Length: 89
Image (cartoon, rainbow, N blue to C red):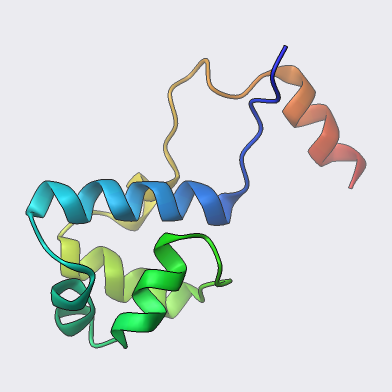
């Protein structure tokens, strides 16, 4: 059975890209709206950067979506093994 666990950083990155594309924006356009560098936005979207709460908030505001929405996953996405693993760390 494949591992269904996903880090918060990758959850944020996936939702960021999904919302950006839904708006029809380039990474550069989002970066301008969020007052961030375009290279930084690209790295965050690829899950390469450990983004700060302040920058998450800028991105969420630019996309006009609540920050909490970036971390919502389908109810069946996480299983008990993910929760057990996180409790041990």
